[in-house]
Amino acid sequence: MTVLVQMRMDGDTEIFAKSLTERADEYRAIAEQAKAAGAVHHRFGIGDGYVLVDDEWVTEQAFHDFLTRPDLQQFISEVGGDVTQPPDVLITEAIESPDQF
Image (cartoon, rainbow, N blue to C red; front, side):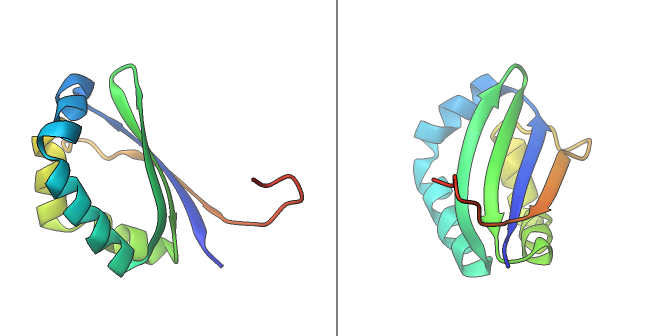
């Protein structure tokens, strides 16, 4: 059974949005590392002063182990994430439903 992870992190969304283009190869490399670590799905959203991460992982522990890597924390900081405060994280068990798409 997988878990759904929604994470809201405050930060500079302008820097973040630029980094998606300027550092695209790094994002691709991190995505491959995440897949190898247990990520199933991943998507970003940008709000007013925050970034939303919408993921699915094989386990909650796999997500936490990946997120807390020092190199990833450094990258998040460089692309506008505020790592001085913990992000808001919501983790739920992924379930199947008849209306799923």
